[in-house]
Structures are given as C-alpha cells and as structure tokens.
Image 1: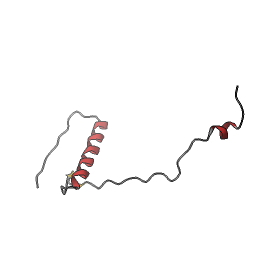
Image 2: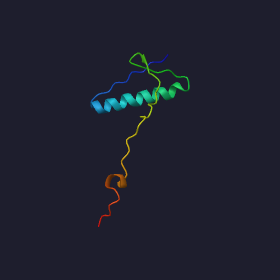
Image 3: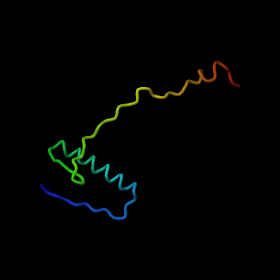
Image 4: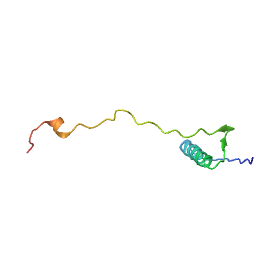
Length: 72
C-alpha cells in the first residue's frame, strides 16, 4: 500500500467542500478498476443515486388560472 498526504492552506469553507466532493468522486471512479482509496482512514462509501420525488410540482396552465377570458 502506498500512502499520500495532501495538505491544503488558505482555502475557504466552500472550496474545502468542493475538494472533498472531488476526492470522493475520484475515489469512486478508481474503485471500478480495483484501486481502494481511503480518506481520513475511512473507506469512501459508494455513490448513491437519489430517487426523484414522487410528485413533481407543476405550474398550473394559463387557462386553468385565468379561465377562458379574452384579454384585450
């Protein structure tokens, strides 16, 4: 096993979240070819796709909102 250490200095909290997300994505992509990557001595969980909401909000149609009125 080879070990690498990454150190980040001067990053904002938003940048750190982005770095964490990119490292997780990279670890999941490498897993497909047999490489196991751990971050902070923890195995990176596999990505899980979220299920779409069962009821999507849909705008009411123009006719439903305003009826059959003719606007001039």
